[in-house]
Picture 1 (cartoon, rainbow, N blue to C red):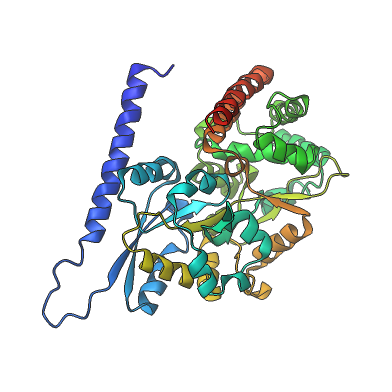
Picture 2 (cartoon, one colour):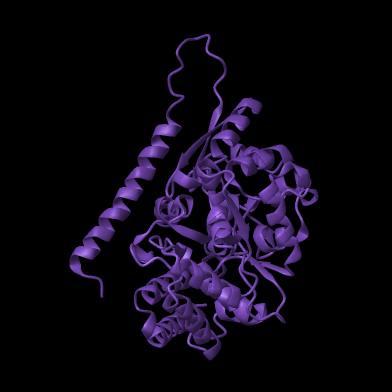
Length: 439
């Protein structure tokens, strides 16, 4: 049970977020109230856009906002960012308050599915703008469509991979590991040389999930993983316990940073910095980190996909798709739809790609428009037989929270992973039972 002071802290944080959102929306909604003179140009109607592209993930948003405001004579886009963790709760607060912005950024998959009843379908503008011709049917089915209607405009696609320090690999004559044995051998060589093999910055919890997901998908068929995230298999199934056991093998082999502990290290200013400096050799992270690496070590890094465990299994790539959604109570739905039309276009999505490191969902974007590393990442995705969302975007938000907590607990106490998995399985089972009974 949460302690009294923890409850107070939690309540205060939610109130702060709610007040922040309310004040922000009042401010950006009222900026046009007093033109400087009678000769001022006609006022544009504001389109408020709340998003999570902040701090190390902010690349591309400013360029898109400026482009829209230059090209559109009737609406002005006003973008406000919030960090990921605050956004996860803040979006629900603004929806409950009844005064949401006109647009949200959001993660495709289970996150969007969880709030779809509070979103505005975009089928009409999708058809009018001919967006079916801009996106592959697979993206439309997996990321755009919920309960037979379209709700989300995809603006970026990412890929989870190892990013590594080329100089460190070259100095120790290490090739990018192709299989699990190669990875363990690389860890041994690097640890013996006094270098942290793999920097894991799991302070925000979500970076740890990539280890669980990839070990699972390299060990078991995608069909099993789908049943697991849908609540049709238990998280203490022997096949899941085997995932924790293999992950523990990497911990026991000294593959990860010990000081600071992964649960105390940020993924960007912590794990990435260790790789830049050569204190660590590699980190498992998404392509959103490309912009971060380019700013610090443009010629000194590269990537490789998660190594093979079972060579008989089809290759699966993992990553999120980011998109834009319109809440039902948007004050300016016409302006929000105008933003969707512009952001769906080839050049707008290219601009976001250059700033963020993301791949582009718009299929008209030429392969040659990407950077070298983006082209090779795109090829890796195409070589994979399947693409799936990461764990926390494949499960209901409540299960995602349970899972991320379980992974953090595992990193702290890997020796008791059977108990952690059983506790996770029991709580997940109770959630699905309750959800079934409430239908």
